[in-house]
Image 1: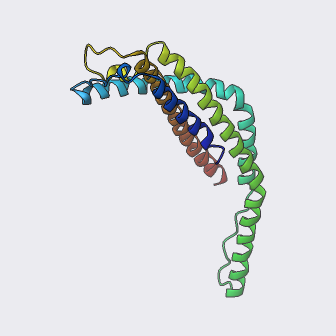
Image 2 (image 1 turned 30 degrees about the horizontal axis):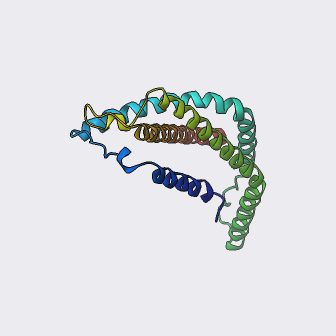
Image 3 (image 1 turned 45 degrees about the vertical axis):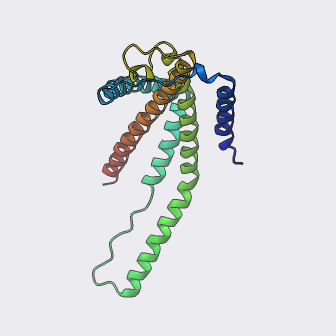
Length: 208
């Protein structure tokens, strides 16, 4: 079994054991809010706002942990990209043999450039992977504390007057923690994508 499946399998086993040990009478069905669309909109909107705040807070910690290393690796990668030679345009009236030779030289130059950039690309990918893992771990820990403090998901979706059992409250806390951690991580990826696009446009302007 792949290593990535072990945590999921362990979580499923723990959940099944917990369900077997809890009497069925202690797990009543939840009566959901009849106006689910409005309740879901309010709940999702609140969670999205908190996830956005959490993402900015986590950005500080991830920048402290990986900011300098990531900046140096990307600077090296950008330097290699800027060093890629731009093939000159073919001379007017060039023979087919000369055009073929120029094209072959251009292809070889691009191949050499990709080979030279491969270690830098691998370094950047490794740093980004470690940065995302740290962001997820920190995000889930912070989200768990936030949810335990009172930010909940199921509580906002059940009918008025319904009180969650201890087990339902535990599930609500874990569910909310996962939603906040996943939402903040998605926002962080979106911010990285926008920043990467801006950097590429800036590098394009530098090479012009």
